[in-house]
Amino acid sequence: TKTNREMAQWLQAAQIGTSNGAAGQSSENSKLTTVLDAVELKLGDKEVQKLDNFSNAAQLVVDGIMIPLLPKDSESGKNQADKGKNGETEFTRKFEHTPESDEKDAQAGTPSNGAQTASNTAGDTNGKTKTYEVNLCSNLNYLKYGLLTRKTAGNTGEGGNSSPTAAQTAQGAQSMFLQGERTDEKEIPNDQNVVYRGSWYGYIANGTSWSGNA
Image (cartoon, rainbow, N blue to C red):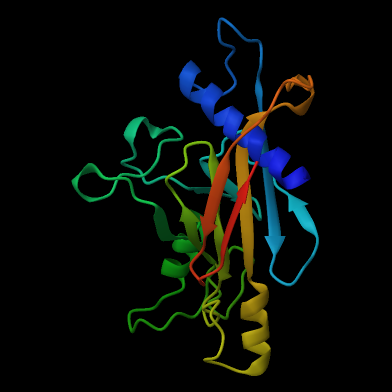
């Protein structure tokens, strides 16, 4: 199927990137190069929206905001898997990202009594500082996928703690993202003797899981 073929492409791209030391380089025995796909799927919406992350799987670009997917102290600063305690691989990573412009506006709109009166570059007086919560699979070097929640002050993205309208807005603020490097399809051999093999398993925070073979 198309899904299994794409997964096979990602698996092959990961192997190429590992052997070459960097994605997109050509090895001595091959002229294959990799391309990068990035898409966002809003929950409840069948439409898949393409994203532009400037050919870097380690960053997510949404709403004109660049969100680094690796921690600042990540090894080499490239597409390396996160390290957990005692040097073991960390399989998931959850964090929040607030654009610098919103952070500055929130501080400027907070008086000495701590009550936020204004924020946001659009001049909103309701304290709607935007924050992005990211929960992603972090142990894959050349493939990043996870759950993205867009939050504003007064909308936690979780729902159930406010009016029905706010809860509906919160549910619509969540989406899934998937991006990764793969071999350009036109460069994959399609000879009858060529067979692509691989398997994968995915799990996200709400308990949903997938598995498949290619």
